[in-house]
Length: 322
Ligand code: SD4
Image 1 (cartoon, rainbow, N blue to C red):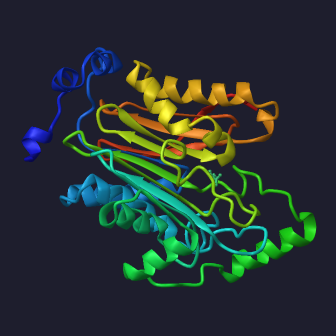
Image 2 (image 1 turned 90 degrees about the vertical axis):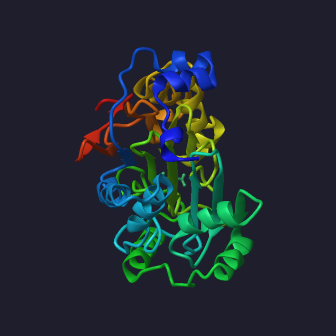
């Protein structure tokens, strides 16, 4: 299909996908040009590379893969890729997924020794009949695809892990303060097509074998090219229990703005959990028209927003204001 045909104006979008989509966007004037959003301030660097890729004619899928690779490759980042905080036994185990404009997706979970899990996830999507590979099988597949086995535990992270082990043993690091850099990214290219990615070393001090929301399609990430995309950060168990990102997209389908949709799902999660005040959960969302939103339980969640050539870190509104 040529790019002209792929371009969906909001009116053709409505006629293609029925009343739902017309209702979803109402009278919203579409924002022109590419738009990229990513969780936390690390998203700034990811957005910059993603935008450059789009400007140079790369695909929106390349944008969300290579964008988050920047953070996976940074050994100083404690929550994604190399340098990620280990589980309770001292193993760095990574989770990631990716989703394209054709509703295709790939995912890896509990992957060790490979610093770019999101790229392995893309290979799962493109080179297998499956969506998700985990553990040893994911590692075997990655090596067959040419990825290099590496030591992901840096000296710095090992020291921090040993200190925590000695002090508090099984207490989970607090998200927002030291566990806050899971990166979720949603991008829309100039033709209006969407893709998303999510990558993390997961909650630090997790049990060996634990898989969080980040590689689960519909929990840590969801993209529907007719509607929009969403990604999650925070306490993954709560996000999985509520199919978080899929629900945000579903609410957008039914007419909520990205901001309203993020807010509604965060409130739903909080309503269902007695101890909601003790956890952080945040969502970012982007719709087909280019509107964006973000919301979290606790104050302190930020996201990077790239539109009209401007890449800025924005604070998300939160349930707990103080
Ligand atoms: C997880 N959602 O493994 C991830 C952790 C995270 O910000 O997002 N931290 O539960």
